[in-house]
Length: 413
RNA sequence: GUGGACGUAGCUCAAUGGUAGAGCCCCGGCUUGUGAUGCCGGUGGUUGGGGGUUCGAGUCCCCUCGUCCACCCCA
Image 1 (cartoon, rainbow, N blue to C red):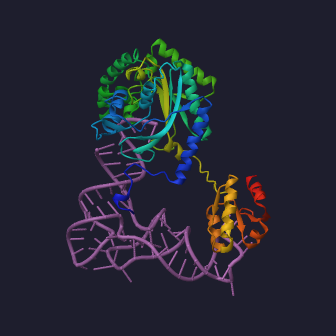
Image 2: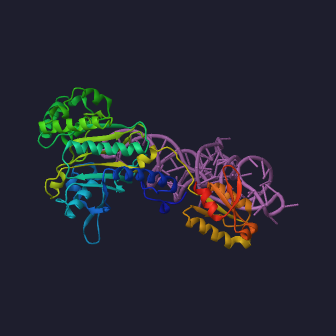
C-alpha cells in the first residue's frame, strides 16, 4: 500500500475505467430522457460564495453548519465547494437575467462536496445529476418532473425502486401544523429518544422519520402535514397525484418524508431502494417556490431534484462489453510500418483499434484476447504483398482473407 | 462528529511470538504465422504508517491513516 502522502483524501475516490463506464451509462440515460422534456444543460461553478448556501439551505442545517468545505482565499473571500446544486442554479438564473425569459428547464451533472463520515454510497466528493425547472407553478409540471425522473430511472433498468411522495405545505399552512406537531411531541417527549428530543426544538418534522423503533411506535398517531394543508396546497397535491395516475407513474404516499433543507415547500419526493443499506435514497427533490425570492429575485415558483450518480451506478447490472473492435497483429519486423497504416485505415472507418505492437505472434494474440477484441487483423508478409488482411473472428475462430474495405464491412455488421 | 469491524503480493486469502506463503493475475519459454486449457520458469512485500513490550512482533500494547458498517444526516 502506498503511504499517506500518495493517497487520495478520505472519502474522495478516483473514477477508474470500470466505474466511469457505469457513470457514463447513468449520464447518457439522463441526457436522453431529459432531452425529451426539452431540458437544457447548464455548467455551473464548483466554487461559490459560502454565503449563498448559508442563505439558501439554512444556517442551522447540518450541511451548512458542519459539512461544508469552506475557506478564506487569498483575496480574503469566504468561498466553498458546493455541497449541492440548487442554490448555485438559482444564483445563476438570477445573475444571468433570466427571470423574464419564460420557463427554464435545466439539468446539470457534476461533483458536490460534503465533509461527512464516508460510507458506501456516501462520499465526500460525489456526483449528482440535477434538474431545476424555474417559472413553473402548477401540479402539472410537478407530475411531469416526477414522470421524467421515473423515465430516467426506467431507462437505466433499475428494479425495485419505490417512489414516495408527500406535501410539505407552504408558508401559510406549515407554521400552523408545526405548532400542532410540537405540542403533540412535547406531550409525549418521555417516550422519544434523546436525539428526537433535541429535534423538537431544532427541526420537529425530522422526528417523524426517526429510525428508532420505539419512537416510531410512539408516533403512530402523530399529526401529519397532509392532514393540515391549506386549500391551495391541498388542491396542488391532488393535482400532482392525478397527474401521476394519468401518466401511470407508480408511487406511494409517505407522510413522513421530510426535508433537511429549508427551502422546500409543497411537493417532496424520493426514489428509494433497499439495496444500498442506509443510503437508499437514489434520487430526491421537491418544490422550492420561495428560494428565488429569498435570494433577491422576483417571486418565482420552481421545482427540482438531484440524483446520486455513484448510488445509481452501484445498482446497474454488469454489462461488460469490450469496446475494442479489432486488434492488429503484425508478424515480422518488415511489416510493422505497413500494419500501422492498416490500423490507421481501420480507425478512419470509425473502428476502435488496438495495435498489438509486433513481436511474437503468441504474445500478440494473448493481448488481443485480453483486450476482448472481437476481431484480430493478422498482417504478415503475404498480406502485405497481396494488400489484404487475414481477419480472424475471435469468438468463432473463423479466419478470412479480406481487403481493408471488406474488413470494415465485416466488423461493422 | 459518535460507536463498532477490519487493513499481509496487483486481487482473494494463509502463516501456535521464531526464516513471510499459496491460488489467481502479470511477464517469459515449451523450435519464433495464431488467443481461453497444459507444462516449465520469472517479477512482485519496509505485513497501511509510526512508536512500544520482547532475545525475537504479521501476531501483544499505544497512536495515526484508510476502508467498511451503524448512528447523525443526506444524493
